[in-house]
Image (cartoon, rainbow, N blue to C red; front, side):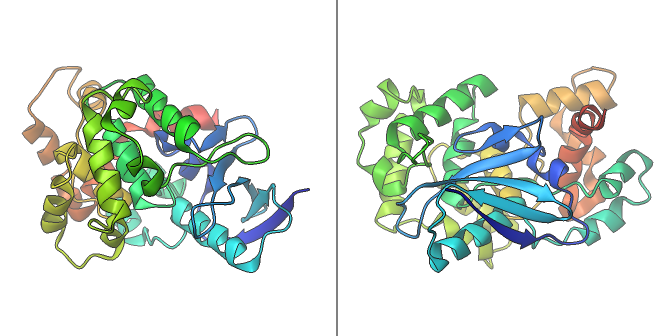
Amino acid sequence: MTKIIYLDSPENFSFRPTIYSHGWSELLPFEIDEETWKLSYVFTDNNGKNPTYATISDENGRLAIEVENSELNEDFQAKILNETKHILRLDEDLNKFYKLIEKQKNLRWIADANAGRLVRSPTVFEDLIKTICTTNCSWSLTKNMTRNLVEKLGISTKNGKKSFPTAEAMANQTPEFYRDEIRAGYRSPYFHELAEAVAIKKINPESWLKSDLPTNELKKEMKKIKGVGDYAAENLLKLVGRYDGLALDSWLRAQFYKKHNKETVCEDTQITEFYSKFGSWRGLAIWCDMTERWFKVEKS
């Protein structure tokens, strides 16, 4: 039997633009249904066990979370609610960003649509692993690596869905496993080393969410992890709520050339200058600008 728990959403929150905000909703254990506009995820308890499949949907201005486990205890239920808030960034205040872009005619749609919240994983560790999976490869390969991690190392729910692996589960594998089974290529030793460091609490990615470090210093901390360069660090910064960096990759550059530079390749400095007027929000401004067509398709 299933159980539905409810969560109030803030006034300037819009469900579809949030779950459709970037590709994370396509990476297991997330799944997105673009016909019914529902987002599903496999949650685990505080020990990384008892995986429970849940589907999140918008119901008259509040969120309905349908879980497959009707006998959830209060602690697990509270964890699902808190992690849903985190995934959808319900507590993030974008009013300053909306005010900054209100005079920008080409970006006014963002505030009108209550867009700008970038969906993220329940943990920074999961976002870190997934971000490393996006580097120097196609999106299809990113999806394959993430799928392999979940299917081979995750814990199965009653309906056969699997959770994202814990650091401990990943640390128990060898670099050869990541090379041969996950098909992670050069990332293989990085995954083993990172998971081991997190498992023994040598590294705590979750601390980045509330770090007092200036953004440049936090970026340096992130880049100490093998496999994390400028792009990956700036992507992670966005996922912890800091939008100073553009996180330029081949896809983002190509979109900029097409939309703002007559399909002509230019230096990154030109892209940086284009968005400099948005200050500490420039990373969010470029992402929303480059994905505008997604929302036009979604609304049609």
